[in-house]
Image (cartoon, rainbow, N blue to C red):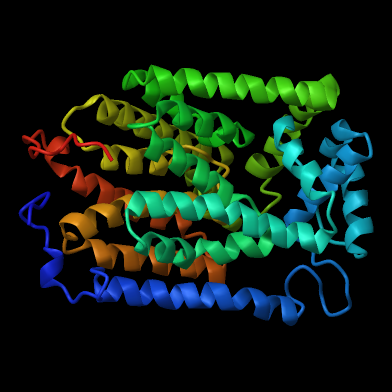
Length: 412
């Protein structure tokens, strides 16, 4: 069996399940899958999800989506960005008060999704959003891994529970980033459309233009640009100039509240900036660390994507990791994106053998994620760095300026 390096372990020498997946990996994923699938009905029936035991809405992130959509349907899309006005809609929906705000801060194109969901009763919209948004994520994970195990890995991913319980958009973000990367070698126009749709969360698209230019992926670049402009134009026609004015008016206040004042509490964010602030560092120090890391990541990715010695799977995985490292605004549900580089590593490991430390590395990353889930410790950045280190190790011959293997540049 051909391997990436002399240290790789052929799958045949590991304890494997009947489907060819290492037994340790399959068993852990299967247990996590069962836990994730079983907790949703349990949470709903025990009144810990969507509605409490008094029939009141549980305050959680999805309420801002439904409330923003309701304001669009009532003819006031620009007012969705006003924190106080939107909270009044949320209070009327949930029928109970809550501390702080679930503010709407997405660009106007995402109001199309919000208004569609607000056409349905709150519980139906919540469950429907989770159920529908997970489908493209499952499809992308299955495609990247290249076998049915991709579906098991996708549902087993520990952030699935976190994302679904609060009704966030981590599934969609992961699907769009994964779709952009998976389709790029063979269907560049479709890849660009996925990237253009990602503008609903613009902080995750910052690296893509740099990398696409460095790799001369002009079809993807133009397709993404056209899609983004078309979305912006459609939202302008639908929601008016006032919605864009409101978005840009409220964005500095949102940034001040969450990235300077820590209104969401620092332990909930999983970025370099938030870890420095959580550890007691000043705002200036936090931004310096964040900019240093972001610059280093950008330079490394440009060099990697320009290189012909690095195989595409590793380029794709590294770019997905880079999108997470350069943004200071990264909640745990956004770490659904980490499933994409894990899927690429699984693809290589299942095809060519896992390196001796890759499965233990997965276990350590899982442990750090669970530390956040159960104890509220901001260890998500550590999980990202571990997966990033595994990807870089796979790209080791290039980093050490050694000749790459014959099939190093083979696309997905």
